[in-house]
Image (cartoon, rainbow, N blue to C red):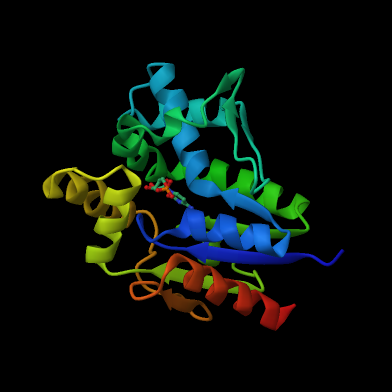
Amino acid sequence: GRRLIIAVDGPSGSGKSSVCRAAARRLGAAYLDTGAMYRAATWYCLDRGVDLDDEAAVAVAVEELPLTISTDPEHQTVTVGECDVTESIREARISESVSEISTNRAARALLVAAQRRIIDQAGVVVAEGRDITTVVAPDAQVRVLLTASAEVRLARRGLQMGGGQPAEALQRQVLARDARDSTAVNFTEAADGVAVLDSSDLTFEETVDALVSRVESVR
Ligand code: C5P
């Protein structure tokens, strides 16, 4: 069949993952969560006791990373070696350390190459992250920056975590991580040719609809 790449970037709490997974289901497309790859790399470094400040040691570990990630939107699993890390890569300890991996240039280059290989093998794929529209797949037929106001993103992340988190803790997790991540990639403004989809005033379904109709218009 025809190849089609749908590239979606955005900050944390923008709803990227759930929106992209739902859009992939509706399109019968593969789904690639590149953030999960940075998280798996972080899990592996922590598991092996790698000093995250040691750039060379991090790069070696990421080079050796025995990562498998499923691209089935119905069945997201991430494994490192024999270990199913699908759940554990979502832990706070991973979110707090992941920027140390994603700001490591050598680690980024390795993960970007791996992402390109996965995208090349998929026919139709929705790939999401921070640098998909700009670095990983700038030639994608559909390129979208999914945004939402900081207020909305904090509220969504709070709900996702079950509610009841102190506001400062959420701000630290969401906004501080974005600030750290921004030093490696620019995902706060759309590059040339990238459409902004602001979901602040949209429901989840409306956001999925908006993404899917962009895809239908190029299909
Ligand atoms: O999307 P998610 O919040 O799971 O991503 C986890 C982390 O992975 C981000 O905070 C960022 O440091 C990194 N990341 C990245 N480039 C991507 C996807 C994620 O640097 N394309």
